[in-house]
Length: 77
Image (cartoon, rainbow, N blue to C red; front, side, top):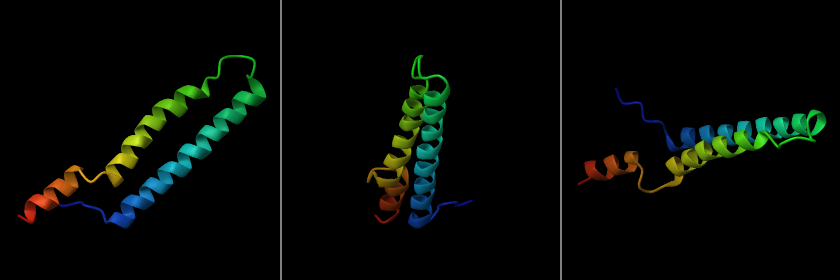
């Protein structure tokens, strides 16, 4: 079954991912600031590790060497 999405759908998925990343991490920082600002900055864990996942998502959309591009180039030979 071929489930390739259009380029527009992939970019919209990335925009949604970016928006959720920003909103949820902002909410965590606000909660930390209001209730626990005297202790360790615990939202850093979510920001860093989710950020790594987000970086891979961005890379998969904009990298010219992804598997989907490789298979398309190979089919055109």
